[in-house]
Amino acid sequence: MRLATFTDRAGTRIGLVVGDEIVDLKHARPELPTDMIAFLTAGPEALAAARTALNGSSARLKLKDVRLDAPVPKPSKFLAIGLNYADHVAESGLARPAHPLFFNKQVTCVTGPFDPILIPRDSEQVDYEGEMGFVIGRRCRRVPRERAHEVIAGYCVIDDVSIRDWQFRAQTFTLGKSFDGHGPVGPWIVTPDELSDPNKLRIRTWVNGELRQDSSTDQLIYDCFDQVAALSQAFTLEPGDIVSTGTPSGVGMGFKPPKYLKVGDVVKIEVEGIGAIENRVEPEP
Image (cartoon, rainbow, N blue to C red):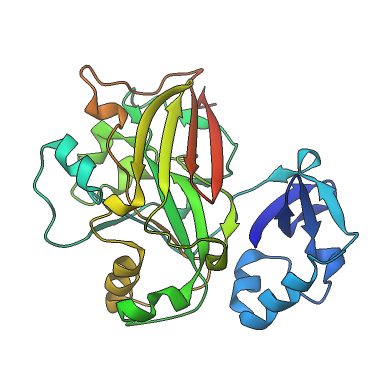
């Protein structure tokens, strides 16, 4: 299934994307929560009930008539990892990390899959990072790698937008990773049964139609399941938490001279089997 959060004149709620339509779960299954975190918290029974709405439900809207929001608009945690693609490590000239290099993106940076990326007045070193993300579906702690797949609700596309000069002011990266509007997520959550192996998916990023990143999630140094095991060893993961799994080579900083984003650019990121997000670069209002 493709789980989405969307908004129209009737408000914001969740649905299932099928082709160019979205099944409105508020009308197809009114007993279900209308918020993604509450829906995921409701567990397998809610997922099973939602799946039945795919069969002949008349509660459908055209995707073109709604706004797709971030699938989880207000997660409790937005976590990411640095230097996690072998080709990106080679591009950076840095050593392969001995441990996962996790950092936080503040949740206020989360934005929709087609919302603008904002160039702030504080820096001109705004960079894109095409990434695959996953969303936690069950509250969990100390999950062994072999069971990590059990707590992942599904997968999405993320742009880990980064302001490079701010990023390297502190080892935590948080400031340079968390400006408002610098966390496009979407276009939906694809449940694991739709993907044969999340660690073998092609990932690409274009800027103004120019292919900048072209890699595969098989280049991940610490794959999705490694990341669940490492994070949950330290703290509890909760339904709706977002984890961005790292970016491959081809980021703007890696070019000589660097190719940072500027107003008017259009960034498109696509992950095989999941979908694509596309964001126009605009000045911060």
